[in-house]
Image (cartoon, rainbow, N blue to C red; front, side, top):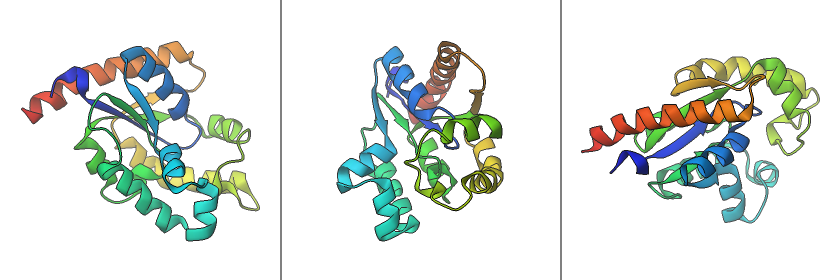
Length: 181
């Protein structure tokens, strides 16, 4: 595998910019973009919210695992991963075995502001969404900090974030491809 073919996996908490940054990075490097949540919705013929309601979070997490293990191309793809995907046991290792992992990070305040505009988040379908975000953020942050190079997305122009992610991908893809030889 050549470095220019190595997949890029964007991970991080909800509201950190994985979908937006993923689209821009994929365009910049000429890769296809897949969003794990959207691909699961497409395959299931229902929304993530419906999957959570009908089958529960554990079933959805199993669908995420299946998608990563074989439901997407092995190269030349940017994958925007759902916020909880990398938190599951063994999933960070699964991603690292398949490509470069970059973790997008934002402050709790930024996450709160961004997620308040989007109601399609089943984990926030609770009495107090802000408290739920604070609890999830605190629990997941240590895992995200171990998940690839971290890129802050707070108060930065999209072009700067994209350029930073592309530089990391180029550097890490060389190492990944060399290790696969």
